[in-house]
Length: 133
Image (tube, rainbow, N blue to C red; front, side, top):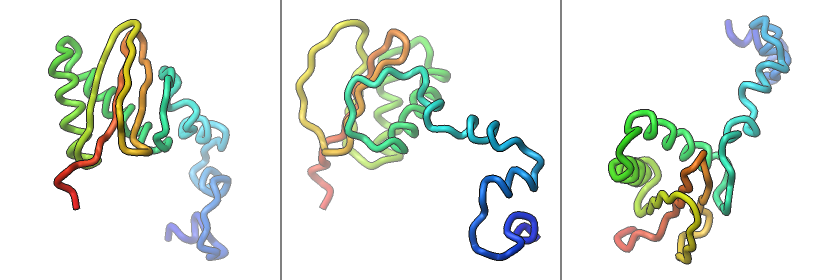
């Protein structure tokens, strides 16, 4: 069984070293592949108070959007906003700018992510939904 393979002493804990040993993987390679540091390596964070996991999910959503809508900024922004509302509840705001900008806005604490990927600057934030109880 999987437990005999990964947790033969039945401690309830599977160590990465045991996992790699059982699957004949190099632990260093696995750590690199799943390292959070490498996930957002093409992102220059400008300002954020968002936790890393949500930033990562938003990053992957944007990569998916850019791949499927490469040439239409208006549709790109609309798609990202709709997906954020669906996946992470309403009310998300998405602004994409090129070059210098100035902004001042209010947002729900923990839901602000302003960053740059290549020549695009993304300003993504969530405000409270007035219809949420």
